[in-house]
Length: 346
Image (cartoon, rainbow, N blue to C red):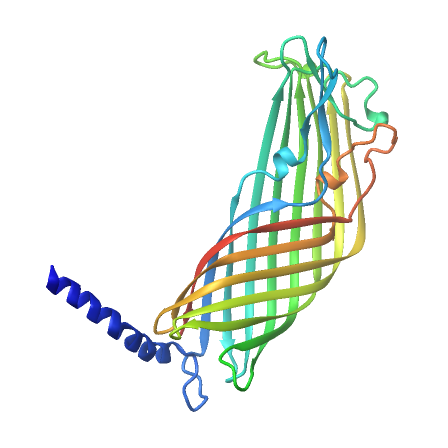
């Protein structure tokens, strides 16, 4: 037992020396400034949730004999701001010289959620508000036994960036400035299903469906920077990253309304070009493992500004005769969560 402890103590003493030697081999540049590793690549597994945006009241509970007689039962956030979901990010870059590189990056997020409300005995569920022009009568949505809201979202992003390395005399950390082009596709769907009983099969007259689909195509440019701060023995760094971009956004909104009770089936769409923005930020601990191989652990956030969203266009005003409550491409949506990944220089 004493021998094992002695070997362990010796390992602790020599580990920093071995780490320092290996860290030199991790550096993509040699001491003379020439490039040791021309290319680099890596990926991240993201574990994200959606936050922010509009919270739309969808379902209300009509009570028979208990105060209050009307209560809010479901809102869009019950499905939208729900569970954490997985996403991914990958990149590939080439170093042109000791201070500059070009890089392509992809980020993808898929998100979904749902929530169901069932009316207790002697109570019913009503749609909170749907457009008046569509809801006289709206028997498949009012006096219902069950309401279910469903949400789906998808974000795809591709970037082409130029990076420029900057070092500050007298300090250990360095910066990368970046500028480039970015394109994003952001989609959201929010729907309400309503049925009057649990009869199987359910008669068509007892079923209603209303949904809104938002489609955003953003194309533009971004600038940003990241800072690498060494923390321990050239093995552990803190990487802080941010980017901000301006985009032309073609925002499309589609809605469909099906009322089995009245036989109503209507579809409508609208679109506009908007000026939108995207902010992205991350903070990561980067562990240099061996010969250009590294692992990172951190937190990443993507913030979309002035986009069309599902909740933002879901009808909530019964006094509006238009099919939409109002066409809205001014929503803000935030995806954020933990990340774990790897990187390789070669």
